[in-house]
Length: 432
Image (cartoon, rainbow, N blue to C red; front, side):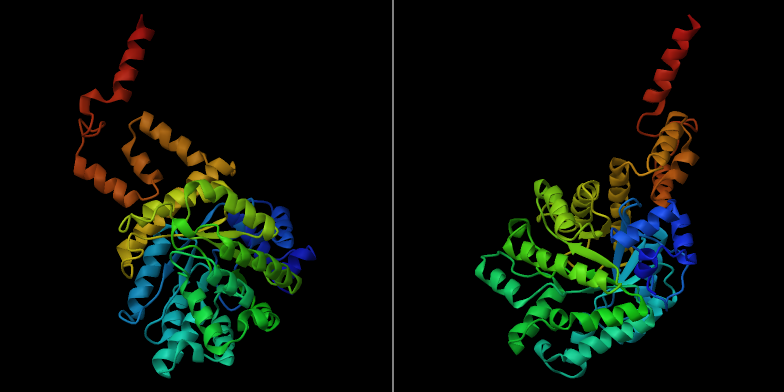
């Protein structure tokens, strides 16, 4: 029995019990959400970790951090370091997007140290091995190689996989007929399209979808349906290709659920702020309430070096509108492979967005820390403020750099601190 099948049958398990405790919700509501498909619990049966968590309706907005080696930087040790930085900063999940070095070794080293759900994009490995090791073209990747890669990663313990099943011949024709500025910017999407164009065949991940589901079900891998036609700039957002793929993802979601496989839907991307809410509503409608996983979205295209900020703005709006899972964006986005400090900044920015959205969602306890912070600020309790911060290290460093004014005010206001002035004024009034 899979997690989803257990939920449908209302079977009480230790996994549901532990997850419900971690999430602070009742086991009954958790099981109901998994059965309905509005909640997913990414947990491969081969990956042992204690931070069992849920993504979806009624639980906190989750954050994913992408790491992974490249052809120029194939070192597994550096990726493990990024993993540790991401977890310390508060990432709920991590994805290994490696395409350089010994990809099985990199992934397995990450898994050894990974105390949270780990995701991958299997087509990355299949393509990298075909091009780099076999010296062939992307279009020469065999279907057998793709599915063996999926099975290998599932056996290793990967908890969720991004797989681009929604790109079909029909979708591709719509994209080609539409004048997009940036075409396709999803790496997995472009690989899939290259394969289809080279072989003049249907997307094998769509054509052999039932075989894919069999592998995922056997190893308890959550299917993250990839948005290969996502917009790569604001001008391409919410066009025919993006919506057509979303329609396919909704159909595939039902097939996966019927097979006992949990599903997450991936979404854009780059998008003007005034289109974000409607995109979330559209996804939820077309995909039957399945958890929605968004990259950003980035709300402007002209901020390289600051895209963790553009992504956090879009992420806050998306999550407040109903998105369940935010993929972080680092300051290095569009420019380079992120280093550990980029990873840390990206996670913190997304954590801010997620927390702000959870307050809007009315999530139980979401406001508690904010109220506690307000009380600490009112009492000029600097130790308490730092401990409550999403990034205590940075808050402590800034406080130390600024020095103190007689131990209680900050270096910006000093004796003119508004809180001190107000308290002094009200105390005088009371004395009268």
